[in-house]
Image 1 (cartoon, one colour):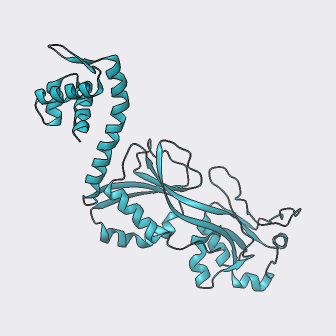
Image 2 (image 1 turned 180 degrees about the vertical axis):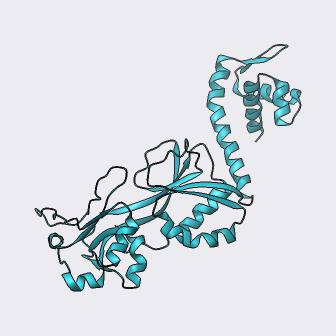
Length: 300
């Protein structure tokens, strides 16, 4: 710990070019700073600083040592700050971007979150675009898929899967498909991505040499909840994520079609700027999301 104190004294002196200024920032006398740095130089057997009556400057060896020490001490200070923040009550404005269909599973439980953390002010942006977390001024975003941005830290939240569903009325009228090829004779409800204009592919398990079925487009829409509602009202078979159809399956408004033939899986992530630690308000929000929104395993 004595050596750690000497390292802090050296780094602050190198930054401020002054024993007096370093002592003022650390909270000790300038003479104590000078003695601490001198002791470190003696231990290392090398001069780190050149002194004169006005200021101090780094030697070449001191510059190399400073460049290695500063990131390590910055990490230590961030860890201390993170621990201090973790002991504080969550409060303040929290700006989070979520997928458009996030309202489906978030809004019903927001009352519970507000009761637990009344001092957290939520500013929620429901958007399917890949927003820039840093430039957009978000505390965090929740998205699915691959997250290659090295400027961001990530926390795995929960998995989801896609499935085929139709209403009991539709299946009574049109019959139930037994294989993917049977979908060619059915009404299919498609989702169109608003940003690309492309239809979402239906990822299905096929036999070796079997061609993907041609899926008729009975209805196309760019809102996934609307597509599910169309299936509930008997307009056809929909390919949707499990958390949007879970309640409809439980109440028998929808039934699974071709269970076990769907192969697409996904993962939700929470992302925030890499240079920031998780504040108390963000930590409790992510814990709450993990607890309430993704407690169920995929239905597949």
